[in-house]
Length: 488
Image 1 (cartoon, rainbow, N blue to C red):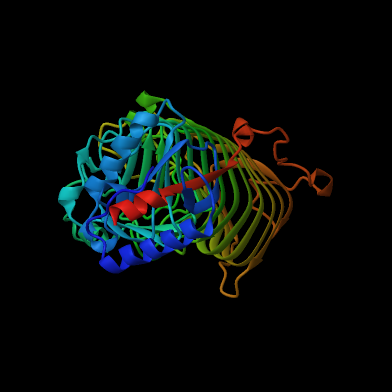
Image 2 (image 1 turned 45 degrees about the vertical axis):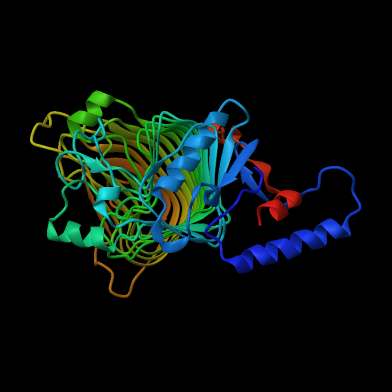
């Protein structure tokens, strides 16, 4: 894109550009058109783009007070014309960019400079109200609809939201306050939500103070979430880090999360609505995650799991000062299943429970759930873990008449806290085995002896998401210096 007149810029900036352009022009003895790249950087993405623009080209002002919602949408609407011509990228330069919600387009990259901060508007009028998710039947905070997410996309293909660790600040304190006071008209917005989409990358960003969930891919496939730093006060309500929801083929890796709720919450719909929608989350990889969540789980499966959760593989996880390492949450009326779960190489430091399963998580969408819809929890495997300063090794509570089966815990050493519970394992309505576990598990997990130390083996095959690779892309901001001089 050629340099265009920017009427609102201070004259001093014009003078600097004029001097810089003149020096470069005089320093080169080149015939023909003088074109130089003033801005250039490389980044990693699933797709590179042919066309690009900066937010300032569409009237964006990064002063922290000017509202940029129209600038974002105008830029994206303009760039959408290149969907079938190599795709496009919107560059957000240094500055504080106040904005309401905006929608993305196909074959598109949103890139935040390291000194760019997106500030979510606290004006509720900037947030459209949309229908509840069909697999939930209602909003999670209140009945009815929900506020649209800050960055939103639906029915998209090939979308990248990335940066050089630029920041998205949800400014969520006012939303948390309304939640606690029961003053919300609709369910709080998320920072990023992508629906019914394919080939999605969300990476190399810092997300802070989300009004509610941070990253929510839902009804989507082929998703990479990578290199995110997610931070919220540990007392903030429902500020889950990453929530893959009714998604297939997802990879979450190399993220650091401090949260007021679950760091990763795997979901697939709520009660009768999730059962009817019937879209499971499956083929999910979680790697190299560091989490702090004093009042919730590092990895949670459920509680909204009525469409099913299967084939989840988590490894190399560091949990610090968190309520539980792995938690399965379900209840009578959920239906669905959680099965074929594999976790290995987890280190836990200062935990309330290392492992927690509950069949009595009784929050329901409404009173129309089927009391005969019993969840199936089976083939849950934990291997090669160490923990220290743990209050209770495990709280494993299935459902009477519907036990959780096929639980396998192998090569796990848990060092109890000085004020630990006298009974380290609490097990009811579960079935399984153990091997090489300290302290000695409950009788429902009988030890199989050291010769079975390889029990609970992690799958050796790879999932399709590991074949979705990122490549090195480059961004060049083109300026014609004759054009610079002409317009100054």
